[in-house]
Image 1 (cartoon, rainbow, N blue to C red):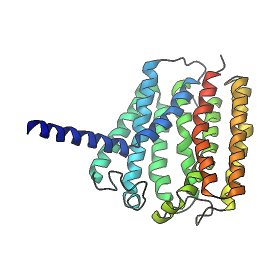
Image 2: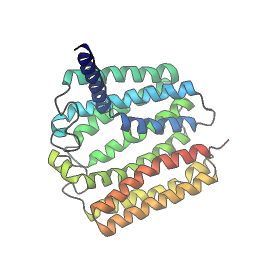
Image 3: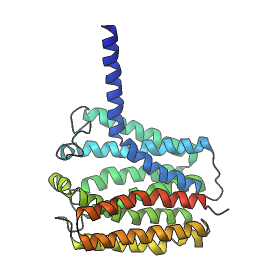
Image 4: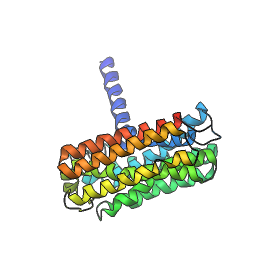
Amino acid sequence: MASAEAATNQFSVKAKLNDYKELIKFTLSITVVFSSVISYLLVPQISLDVKMVLLLTLGGLLVTGSANAINQITERKTDALMKRTANRPLAAGRMSVTEGWTVAIASAAIGIGIMWYFFNWQSALLSAFSLFLYAFIYTPLKKVSAISVLVGAFPGAFPCLIGWVAGADEFSTGGWILFAIQFLWQFPHFWAIAWVAHADYDRAGFKLLPNQNAPTKNTALQSIGYAALMVPLGFLPYYTHLAGPISMWLLLAANVAMVIQCLRLYKDMDVKAARRVMFSSYIYLPVILIALLADKAQ
């Protein structure tokens, strides 16, 4: 009897922890923090310090997790309408709105506090602004207009700038270049996702594609345009002495590959082609960030 009760309690704790992980979108948050950590390590005067990297990871994870929690609180009713999000804790009714807000507020306060105390006030304020922009501007705007994708690209790229500022103690060229790379990358990336999940998004009332009603040639053309802008941008890390020539050629290859996938989307105009863009974009960001760090200018 006691062992059965202990097993039930253990299951309940595990289920609750899983709900918290889902609330803060733990996997997504880790990928966001990855950009911030790499950008921090790319600062010229910064060398690997495990303690500081862990603190930056924790601070970034808490702030990003807070933004994701607020997103789920706000969208709990629409999440319940979509297959891929219907089982989220708030949408499924396993977690109350009060509990969600408690987690979100505590995470934001601790995360921003870590950024301020261990790094600098600039990175802390930028973290707070990024959270606000994502949770309170981008999130409700998704139901109003496709301009939400442009607005959301700013907090989506801020992790690079936050990481850089945390290490450099200033807003300088390297941080803005990294911000620009991630900013432009988001358009083909996110429109490919919206293309694949269009039926779900449309059911929930989200307006995320340029045409808003359905994937069109215009969506593919705009994806090509943003991917093409990434090509010349890829030379800037080398010419500003952020990284060496090897990463420059890797960036060129990766950027051209993204353009080709977007061109194939324009030609084929189907979900299969959109998935190719989506998966290419998933691979793109970690590959180019690791390449830049491995080839960091000394």
